Length: 179
Image 1 (cartoon, rainbow, N blue to C red):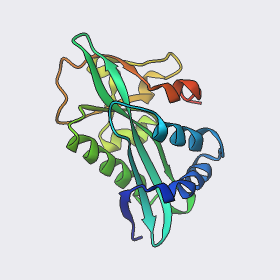
Image 2 (image 1 turned 60 degrees about the horizontal axis):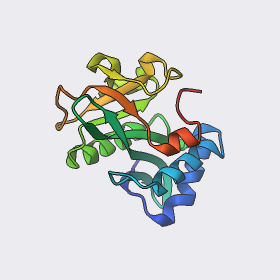
Image 3 (image 1 turned 90 degrees about the horizontal axis):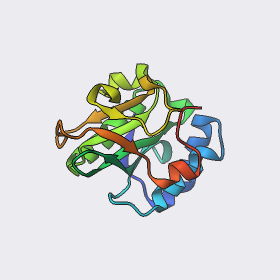
Image 4 (image 1 turned 180 degrees about the horizontal axis):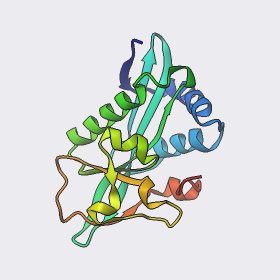
């Protein structure tokens, strides 16, 4: 199928909500999290990308600013969440393309690390590794160790160890830890 990936615009937000509602089977939590992350003040700009098929938005990925509490200093990092693809367009490599575009944007911005909670069977194929293997600690006991993953980018340095800290919307909306 023919897809284009581009930056999300304000006019896309209703369609993005619909994609996440269908992808996650939840009309509230994930769409509301994306809205809150877009609006939250942050040290890094939000990276919000959509995938289109013709005039339809069929996928979305969002990177939002979080922090790594490293021994040397706080480090601005990204969290990749949410990632959603319309069910009719899943299994066509669209999630992989959205992730690659988001990681490229983070790398271009010189952000050293992108964290996520997710299925290691899927995300290891995208280049993510178990965060604990790089001496990075989870922000919550509700995140199973294999699900807490990270993608080191070009700006990553070995001293960047410590505890990952989600931004406030993740906590306020109880979106930390796999459900």
